[in-house]
Image (cartoon, rainbow, N blue to C red; front, side):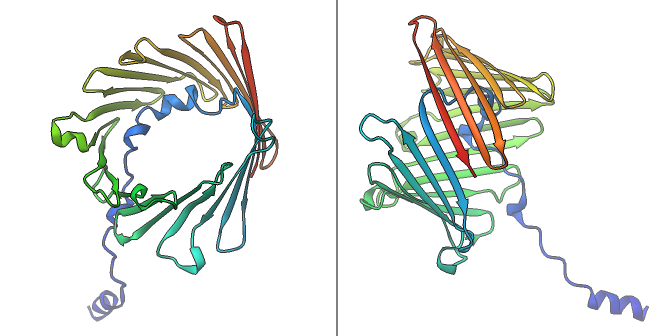
Length: 294
């Protein structure tokens, strides 16, 4: 008995469960992401781009560069971006992006998750006008739920927000803006993911526009996807696409355009991405190449 009591005294206390450790559902705009990875990602069908990402030994800082070749106004317009996970040794916030584009314009994004368990606060600024500073709040402390709210720093009544919730194979969500205070309706979305099957529906513009996405994983190497737009300015638009090993892609759209893409790893960290778009209706084409070093 004494040994049992002694073991209880010496046993370290069990820490309370971290509410933020729950797997949060996707953001509202990512509801159709499974299909969009086949239909939209890695299609470099115009322009010539060189990208490089280098992690440094300075507190894990990451430098990203992007150079667009053969531009109309400049031969090699470039974009530089820094990421500082622990800026100047301060562990309480992260500089997610400090960017300067080809026009010399700056962009700053910073965030912290130290304020409250499950709460992330981020700030976005162009470093030129305080009235354009956006503040975002993301809370994942509730099981299977994600809450997001974003507003102007100097005008909090100008806001957007969203709520997503997942249960089993389903994820549903809604997205709203300050217009909801004057009678506006939020956007609604739902997705189902079961085995190789995926589908989603988004309802926007006061239920005046619907976009549906479908996806099927034929095999570990072959994936197919489709999307259709009903209502709104893009009424009748559709896209059908297929991906092989995530390296070879092709898609066709309602405007009689055909796009194909090839991704090749030359060596570890060195990737070449090429794409071609041909318009059957217009009889013209465009192509693009992207080199990435990471």
